[in-house]
Amino acid sequence: MRIVFQTFENYMGTGLVVSWFLISAVYLFYCEKRKSRRIIFVYMPLAVLLLFFNPLCSALFLRMAEDEIYYRILWLLPVLAGIAYTVCHIYSHTEGKRRMVFVFCAVAVIAFSGKFVYDSPYFSKAENSYHVPDSVVHICDAIVVPGREVMAAFPLEMVQYVRQYTALVCMPYGREVLTGFYNPLQAAMEEDTVDLAELLPMARAYKCHYLVFGAEQDFTEEPAGLGLEVFLETDGYTVYRDTAIELIVPQM
Amino acid sequence: MVQILILAVLTLAAPILAGQVLHGVLGGRKRNAVVFEWISGQIILWAGFLFVCVPMILAERDFRDVVVLFSGYMGAVAIFGVALRLRGIGRRDASFQENKEKDPVAVFLWICVIALIMVQMFSALTLVYADGDDAYYVAVSVSTESSNRMYAHLVYTGGPAAEMDVRHCLAPMPVWVAYLARVCGIRTVIMAKTVLPVVLILMSHAVYFLLGQRLFSDSGRKHALFMLVIQILVIFGGYSIYSAQNFLLVRTSQGKAILANIVLPFLLLLFLMLAEQMEEGKKPDFRLWIMVGLSMICGCLCSTQGTLLTCIFLMAAGICMAACFRRWNIFVWTTGCCLVPVGMLALYFMLS
Image (tube, rainbow over all chains, first blue to last red; front, side, top):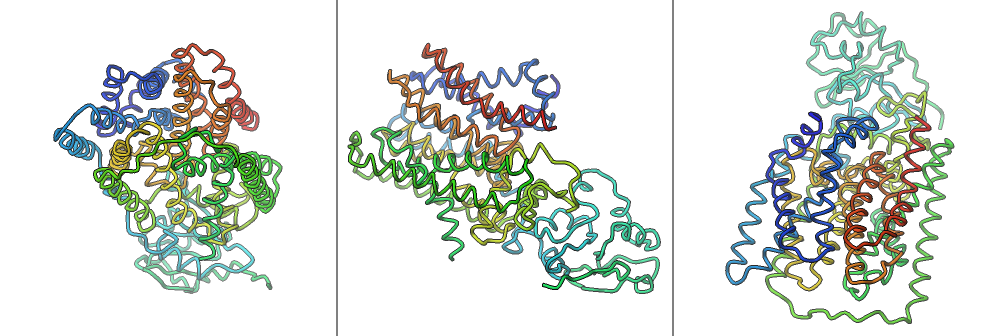
């Protein structure tokens, strides 16, 4: 049951908006006469909440699905429609100047109860129409070969965007390394001073045609002496072509 | 320009034509019936997409077969909808008294609503949200469109998949995104991350518009106020990363966001319409029950968990309606509507 309450707490976030919805449901229980509205905004949400907090149901659900998506049952609560309907219901039962004062206060209270979505630090201005970083676009455009796939190892910050941009670039490790999976090649790629003697056998085992490093990264040995040619320098990254891995370009 | 026109045909014209099969469901409320036909038409098309796509994925057929079959299905449903509409064109719909007088307060509120929707659409075009799940869903769409194979590769790395990703391939919404990209000729990543979110945000607000219209058919001002409060709640929905409205603006073209912001609110609208008909002592329009069933199939298309969520919704709403109206035959309809989701659930357990 601890997971269930924790999930509800997470879903509530700062708490006020969901509280307004619950208060709305109580208000409509007393003030709404039409059965159809009571079913949608009072009884059905109550049934959903009873199911959500029911230990048997939660145990069954958690057996079938992951803990971290249990909160989605709460999407069945008509939070938006319930609060908006209640505001309109109260509005229709007030008269004169008080109406406009109520609307102004309701809108202000709802806005202050929530949090402006676009304030999230995860939002940033799009660099291009693809909505992936320019650096990914420039590097991928340079390394793709028509008619076949190429293998390239990228720095961690680019990993999740590469295959959103093109399926023609394959990678030895993907987004899973961002969620805690350890990959020794990725760990070696991220070193401030890259140990090429350790890294290259792993990269060649994956048949990486290209290796992408930050321009500020150093190497224990001279890359050119180990078969790595500078292919491209762009957006603060250096792309090396490993000449030991053959790259046959199909005749189109 | 041509690409945007094709997109408009696929996401606006075709659904509206398909939605003609439901013409008249709104009864006398003819005003803005096209919005209802648009959303319900899209639900009909999405439901069909699941039936076309899942067998093709399981049979390891090419994506181009899905493109051909689904295009055929879309065309057939659109023609069927138009034919039904033309057949009934001579019939007179019940008259609906519309208030011709313009209420300046309502006009002001509607201007605010439209401005706030425009802000959301503009933000979808110009802002990027760094969501890790896009690395899966967008990559599936990109890989499908590029390779003509569906769920045949490891999404994150591009290597061949040793076994089928059952959890995701039974909810192939990313393949629909790839379909739009292929037919429109728009690059898949642009379709998924830039263009489609604009359409889906509009679609979600259209569902709330219909809900508001149903709730406040007597007052344009209250309808506008309802929509304004919805906009404020959506834009200030960042109070939790788990809220449905947060998903609408940050993960717009992911199936779970479509489930939370289009399919579930549309189910709510359908149940409101059914409950109103029962309250008025009328026999519920069977087409509404069919739409409930199709919406549940859409839930399966959006997310594997949508299968469970739509069934829970139906159970909760069905029990409440049956108890309130003492109409126990509701359970026959709800059971019928659950057949496909339960079948999908059984398929999931069989394959995984």
